[in-house]
Amino acid sequence: MASNSKPVILLTGGNRGLGHETLKLLARSNKYQLVVAARSQSKADDAVKAIAPKTGNADLTPVVLDSDEAIFNAAKIVEEKLGHLDILVNNAGINRSPNPNATLREDFRARRIVTVTSGLGMFGVALTEGSPYNAWNYKVPVYRSSKSAVNMVSAVDMIALREENISTVLVEPGYRRTAFGAFQGHKDADEGGKVIARAAVEGDNKDLFLEIVDDEGKHAEFGW
Image 1 (cartoon, rainbow, N blue to C red):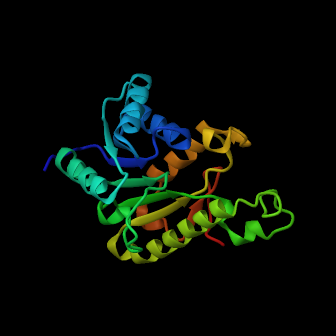
Image 2: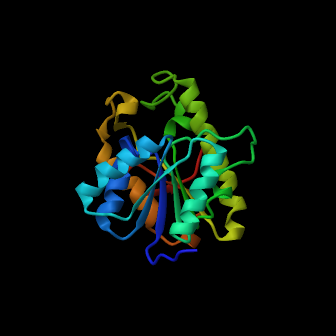
């Protein structure tokens, strides 16, 4: 097993949008060994090729997470090349087996798990008539449901993983101008990347419990 002095961060979806902006910020700091995960080898390689010359950071490792086998292989690469994983940033959904208990944490034993979510997955937002993001203005039932599921899984992980000294953090970067949203967001993607990056590396793990990091980088009460 190799050893690595820098904290190791694995980020999914680093080839585009908020994930790419987050990756760029972390790479520029030159404080971390970064593992860039995507759903294909070409996307992961392209992300590394795009980031490295912009940041001068060569500590980038591309991996593929498009199946259970690929995730197992990626975990093996991380273990053999880097020796450990400190922070896992779930910025993009990954196709997994139908096993409801299968999560990325089973393969990557990170000490902090950061999951990107959206206020659109909260009942309070959906049913509040005065909210600009309520279900009257933005129906998108599939997207809302997926984020509600992410919120619930994270809530359970917050409780279950605390006994293992693993911190689980939800981050809501806000509606940003990205290709995923046809560039119709209200704020720039790079600012959203800053919010995700801060959620990944700031704060003491033991103090991060039942909280969500909002689009201004502030810790807010976890709610539904």
